[in-house]
Length: 226
Image (cartoon, rainbow, N blue to C red):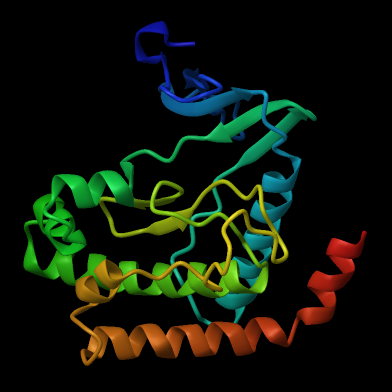
């Protein structure tokens, strides 16, 4: 453990951010230089449901990529070590949408432009944002993920949007009359507005992803039934 890189989050259960030195070995047992791998350790949370959802997202990602549809999903790893504790992979360079909107005048595009000065790179980053936004809208709709707010939707500097915290599933939601998916006006503005090519691409990706995943409905139903 790299002690100087560890810290504690300011939240009710005070989860720990732990940084490990990891060394990979090749086929000849030659060790590579150490890499830092960060995880969040939670005590007081049941992460088994989160682990299940992440496994389903990883499976969806594989099925979509088989038909050449890459929605830039981020199936980070979750390992429940007991009914009340576990590890969650920390995705480097990620921020909550709440913090992004507070720091960049409620403008997601400004955040992406600040971290991606090159015009060509920025175009790819915006495409990543549109694809990942479509992917998680469809996934959160299919699984009926509840309690969606801008604190449990994160985005990286490379444009990857992803959801965390899957405590409420299959239509359960602490909010009354909650929408079927979390899709805010700021997301539409980042795509270029409701009449833009970016927004039309978003709708196309949503439609493709939903129809493709629907073809595998029995697979997901059987896995979840188990």
